[in-house]
Length: 156
Image (cartoon, rainbow, N blue to C red):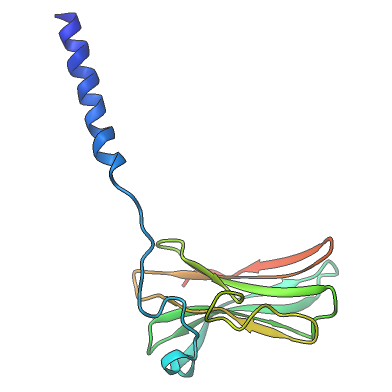
């Protein structure tokens, strides 16, 4: 009888494992994901929902990261703007991340306008669909050899 109990117990323990092993998480795919904020004129209805300052080692604000949202398209994207032109040997970049599935794009992604390089001051990322209950956050960084400054916005 004891042996039979062991067989039943081990079978019962394996059933949940078999069930849950077939479940996989997938990123959401929406028609606006990865598109430029200027696609379908989404940027024209944009507002800034959250910001974060890039602060250097001297406690000076050197730039800002914005979480942008289009009320018309229900999309979010990130924009980084430096206070002055980036100098040679340094770059800046922004990322947008949708919290519900982790979908992430940077300024370098198709639909963005490329990272900030010498002589430039800003860049934007492609969009992610962000209709409630979805939320997103923006991340920005300024970096060079042995130098990194970064900031996250809150989620919206």
